[in-house]
Length: 311
Image (cartoon, rainbow, N blue to C red; front, side, top):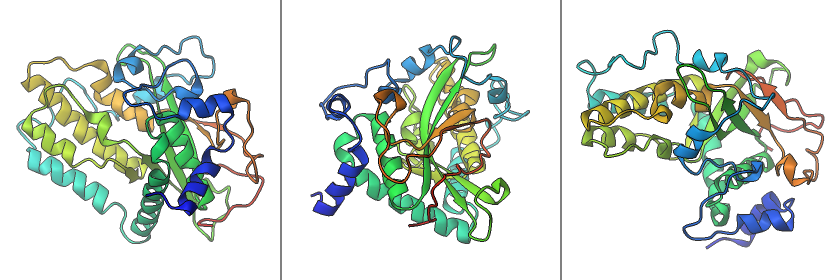
C-alpha cells in the first residue's frame, strides 16, 4: 500500500504534466506506448526500434562514434566464446562485474543510488506502463533525493554494419566532494536502467542462455565500463543461443547495436517533462540546460543553482 508521503513525492514528480499528458500516463492493461512524440518514445518493441530512421534529424550525431563502442576486437561474426568459455563462466563474469565493481566507496555509492532508484520505482508503480514517462519520473524523484540524475537519449544513424536506433536510460553523475563541480576528471558516471534484463530477450532461448539472462539485473546501476563488459558477454550468449536454434541474429540483437544503447552518443536532459509538452519544470532546477554529449565519459551537468550530493 502506498504511503501518503510516497504518494506526495510521486505527485510532485508528475505534477508539471498538463491534463493531456496526465491522460497518457493512465495505466491501461494491455496498452502499448504510441509513437510520434517525445513523451511516448519508450521503444515499446525492438521492431519499432529497428525501423526508426534519423536521417532527417540534423541533431542526431554521426554513427561513427557508435561504431567505436564495441572496440577493435568486437567482431560480430566471430564465435569468440564458443568452445572457450562456458555458461558457468559467463554467469560468474556477470556477477563479478556487477557485484564487486569498483569496490570500496564505489560500492557504497552504487548501493545508495540503487536503493533510491528502487524506492522511486515503487512510488511510481502506477505509471510504469508508460515506460518513457516512468523513466523521466524516476529521474525527477532521484533529483529530489539529491542526485545529479538525468534522462539520457541515445540515438544513432544507420551505417553499413548497423541499423539506426534509439534508446532511453537514466544516469547519475557523482562528483567527489573535494573536486570542483565542473571538473569532469573527478566525476563518476553511473548508468541506471530500470528494465535492463528485458532488453536481452530472444526467441526460443536455450537453457544456457536463460541461465545467462537470469544473471542480469532488472534494475542496473553500473559504470559505463562495467556495462560494456556485461553487454558483451550477454550479447555473445544471445547470438550463440539463436544460432543453436537455427535462427538468424536480428539487427537489434547484434552486439554493436546493444552496446550503442548505453554507450553510444546521447543527449542528457534534467527536465521533468519533455520540452514538447510546453511546460517548464517548477522550482529550483528551471535554469538547467540540456547538453549534447558525445561518448560515454560525460562531465556532470552544471546547474546555475547549487545542489547537494545527497540532499
